[in-house]
Length: 474
Ligand code: HAM
Image (cartoon, rainbow, N blue to C red; front, side, top):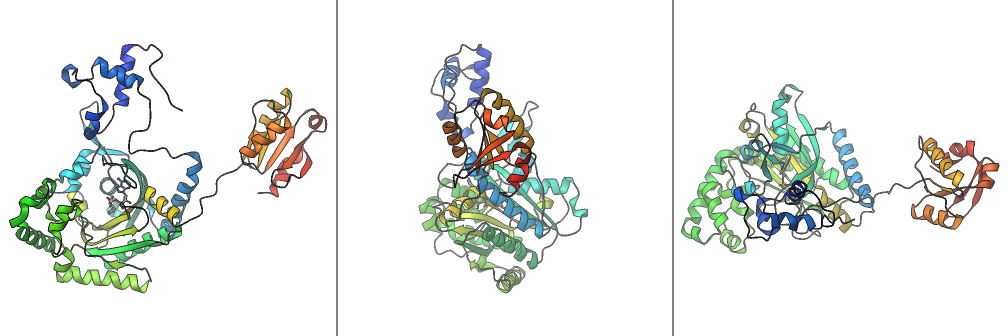
């Protein structure tokens, strides 16, 4: 339903408040949200802006969406599968807050203080002038919680999974949203290839459990910090003569963190990078052996994968194994999942030297891929019985009966007197298995007239035996 704020005369302070709420948008968008040139002192909103906002039709912020009741079953299917697959592997669920001190994320980004990543964050000051950020991913918050709760004292490895909304101020398109949802998994405490392979195998089994068939695991390695240093030096050297032809962002990246150049979507940048060596071509002996061992496990366990030298996972915290899972039919944003090893991140955030590896997949993209792969939609909850009051006295009777039967079954009812035709139509629209009619005759017989909506079969059932009767149909 759409709401309009224009018609009722609200006191000005209330309008300011509403306009303020409506105007909550990332910095990149603010120029578009209000058209007035009548600037208010101190950068606040002008009267014109407030009135514009007050008559604005309220709708979800661009890049965010509602998950409607009819779509919930699919979401629950994915969460249930994640819970089952991960719990069976000893991965325990951790919930962290939706926002953190901004430092949790800026510190995890690393020395490069990556400008692009920071621009994508929803950062704001609270009333105490603290800088807070809506989580743009789970990993940094999970590491913060790991340190804060001294989880390194727990039996190793510590395996944690999380689910929930994630926020990035990106340009929306298919598969790219400003609020989206991730299922995230982290394994702390071991740096052996066995753990890398386990993380990837779990991810694969989970996506398979969701019914996906068209996904491809792409595996790469970005080496150890020394390999990365050598590789960055190589990139700087080969690109120096043509650095000024790179896009502005890429020039910045070349200076701060050259590996991230490969994240550029600019076709001109991509052309300049073509033919260059990739980190995989310059691995040191240790990283090479580690990478080989991970592949060995995956082959033994029959987890299909492709080696892909273009997987670089540019964030500073990644080391050695890096991987993505892609799906060919969901458009340009084909990555379902990204992950990798991040030994060093726990220390970077002020904790002990504990290695880690993890991944996250985007639930919206996985649901899109499930649709493309023709996975049947999740079972939608339907009432077993829809009660229809056929006179005034029956309105309260069916409500009381529904409350009683709901201790065991899904029961719905009409809230006003209905004639049989309309009542049956209501029951049909609710997708009920049975309609239960109640009127004068049924009251006299202390019964309900039950109609099986699929077959049309009718039975008079004594009101005290409804519970037993329904049991056969669950
Ligand atoms: P990421 O590659 O940034 O990794 O995101 C993981 C997944 O989230 C992507 O593969 C994609 O499916 C989904 N995703 C990302 N951005 C969007 C968006 N704007 N709209 C919809 N879906 C999106 C991470 O987040 C790392 N923290 C993963 C990780 C965990 N590494 C180690 N542990």
